[in-house]
Length: 195
Image 1 (cartoon, rainbow, N blue to C red):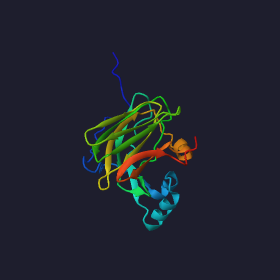
Image 2: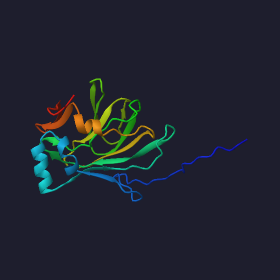
Image 3: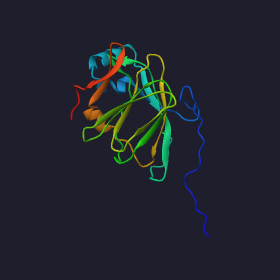
Image 4: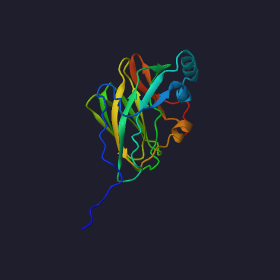
């Protein structure tokens, strides 16, 4: 009987449960200058970049093989702040293989997972520490930090072959925006959405 072999070594990665960061790997970082066009108030974004090109979020690419039998994972850290009245957020993406889902487990902070599918349905799931959000297959998704002081730190996992389609969101945007109204987060139509 042949012993099965694997080409992927088992890996142990240490993540700090407060910051979400790992001393073992570098993060991929997104500053406001790389995302300014994604916010509804482009002038506010431009002015903020001129004052201070803040780090909006960072996340890990763990280098997991892009095969259907493997699981990609890591942490994502979205920092507190707003551009105009719109909360800091990740770029958001569809999966290249549209029929793949993803799970996010919140370690710290508060916020929303904004989701929408190509057929026009959208959902926003509020979550905080100890809560997981399942992103169904076919849904683009974006993390939004609604805390004024704390990072939104999540652990994520998805099928290794799912891939990332950032281009569709960069071109069209999301149908909804999360903005502050009377001190509370609310969802409004995105005037820049190119559906």
